Length: 447
Image (cartoon, rainbow, N blue to C red; front, side, top):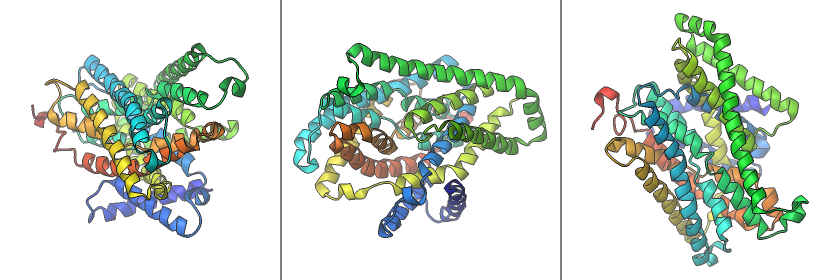
């Protein structure tokens, strides 16, 4: 029942924000995050929490992200760029910055934990650091995708359509660190407990590699599955697309199609008791639904499906984005960073994290092909982060508690509280002003 309440909350906050933003010049996600933090204060004062009031808020946010990536799939059409160059740049942006940050930050976090052991209250090993840094390396698609979709829909694609490339890069950025996460988790836990006794079988690095390989193959299969579904849908619904375009009813069609799709997912989840809020399930769902949208817009010849992306993004903005960021704000625990010394340590970590990813992004976009504005936009897209630390901290809590590594959960929550507030606010606000500042329409593009 709270799904209905969350839907009403999302719509009400969206339209209230329309009025507030006439007087306050901040990005929407930042405003929603502030609302969530305010709700957290109220809930704490009342002796309750977001989870108790809205137990399905995480699941609702997961559905909203599926909707967001459906919209991104509909907009992954790089007709105005050279396809091979666009694909290679997008792949590089989705892989190199995340791995560069994750690996170097692992060493930095380990050193920081040793130097600031008295402030933190613990030290962490290399593999524990690698686990945290790999999760930290994931940027927030809930900021990148809506911002980029908004620019694309208004024609702000500049010389190289960097907003569309960042949509794909953000998707990859949230998947490429998974092998590192799996390796780091297994190695970190193995230092604390006997994994072989825990799982009841002999473990070696060949098995660890096989686990990573299975995950990668599963991701590829999910993408191929989405492509097949997309092609089937185009074959079946092409006549309908023609009619939708000819009558100008893309908005209604987008709302109906999106609603039916999400209802279908909800029914499957309910029937098979799939944990929709689980990170792996949501990740696989995102891969499938993005591939479906991208395939439909590629195969469809009517031209109407591209408009579906615009309206799907609008639908996410109304019924999804407010709850996603309110839920993040309401779950931030600032009590864990009450010490000024601790805040300074965490701010150093934030600067290092953002700095490393910025350097790697500049490396990928080096040369004269990309404008200065496009490079700045790509860098700022990767700034908002921190939510994944909360998600994975909760997801891994069982095994980390079993391995007597509660301090690592605490460290993730410390980082999440400060890094989410700082990077979401800074990145979201700056990206909100990207059009006509960094990104231009093709005819206005500056060399």
